[in-house]
Image (cartoon, rainbow, N blue to C red; front, side):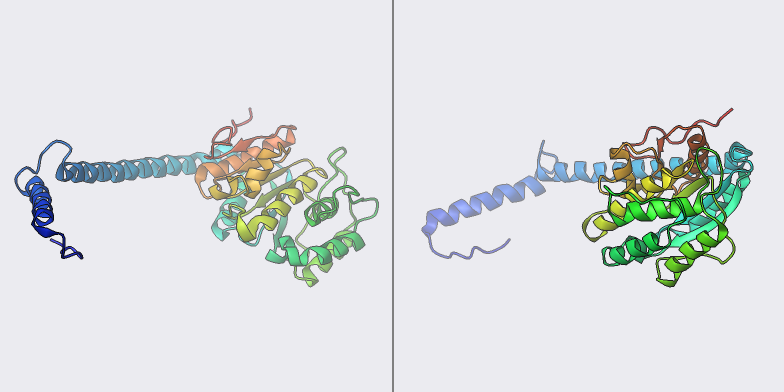
Length: 312
């Protein structure tokens, strides 16, 4: 029993304190099952905690089993859905390597032609690199391409430039840049530290899959998430379709996928790319983009479904 810091107050106060302590002790020692008593409450809390942990473990096991099953049928499900379609993969600096590897593998299983992989560095979406990025893309813009005069942010201008340089024309399927123009654009951005790619591996894509990480876009990540969303929309305007795939936190209101969904952009999004169903959704969403349709998939409340239906 803790001692009172105040030693004065007389016999009455002392008796009152002792009586209160006695009642408390009796509650624990003499009547541990007293209705609504502290022991019963503690027991109930402990039981609820055990049940919550058990329920969480069951849910996790069921989710893992379901995802494992989807993974086992994913290859057959996507077979031929992107046959002979050139797909370019872009990745942000925080994309998980396993997510990139697994999505790329499933794209190949869909019959898609590999148009290459461009890794966008942290500097590409950073505020302190914005002015130089805009200058480079303006000075290496493919002939005939134009940059927006009312949207002057670096994400939009970079998306318009790379869209013209890396994507096929959405109306006629023709290339929008010569190999020399594409090499000039990519080379200048690589030399300045904005991106990386394997020399000679990049071809014009009909579709782009942009794989990002797991940022909710808050605090210091706000600028980057905003520019990623604008970049994806500008890129999409130049070609047949763009799918942005990330982990679930990107679907937060300030995350790149959350921003795209809120803007009702024509870019398709997938918020659970680290799961088998998310990777399946990414490939099927790319196929859906070819038909002129946009969808939002994953586990967040802003998603329409886990994945699109397989096309007939």
